[in-house]
Amino acid sequence: MSRIGKEPISVPTDVNISIQGRNVGVTGPKGSLDLDLPGEIDVRQEDGTVLVERPNDDRKNKALHGLTRSLINNMVIGVSEGFKKELEIVGVGYRAAKSGDGLELQLGFSHPVKVKAPEGITFDVPEPTQI
Image (cartoon, rainbow, N blue to C red; front, side, top):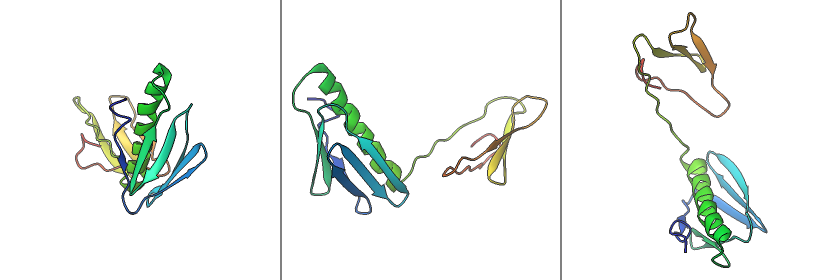
């Protein structure tokens, strides 16, 4: 079996998972996501966990087994906790500043680069070289 695919996915109490045919829906405090199941992969829910299963050991099914388990796990994390990415700006004179709902970056150009935050994304600038 796939080592990743055989692990059960624990579901927090504030996350709801619905399995309807070949579609898996995950809803939580930060939104909802849907996934269409690939190939012959099956998903079932048991006692606060989600199990991903494959019918046989074909090479394609092995790959899809681990992939599907990882995608569903990432969906659960995304709707419950959200994701965070920290960036560090390295260079002389390079810096970032928060301006309104976006960023203003000094990156060595003759002008500052302004980046507007997409919907659902927030920027935090604790130091001029960290985002």
